[in-house]
Image 1 (cartoon, rainbow, N blue to C red):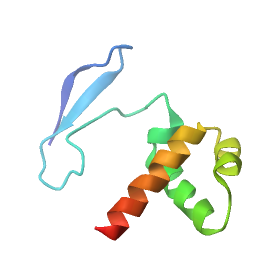
Image 2: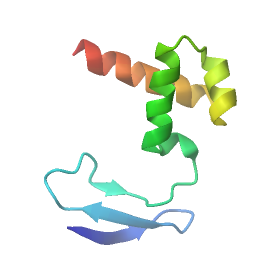
Image 3: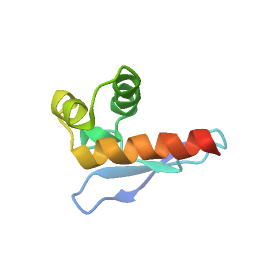
Image 4: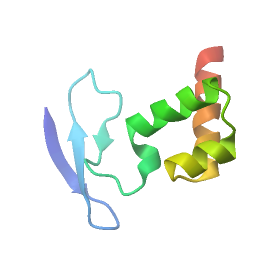
Length: 81
């Protein structure tokens, strides 16, 4: 079950997922930053596995190098656990 859960600082509607299957409890339907989108996160990992560098991935996807680096680190720690 999804219900409205207030607004962000910039006025976007925030939603709350009450189902136990949800990975995240709150989310925004149309985030401003592309780095939050699941398909961008997936492409970061795919491009890394294909040998693309951090700067190359950031340029191609139009996101920050810091976003690329943090996503790669998250995946690295998730695999090692």
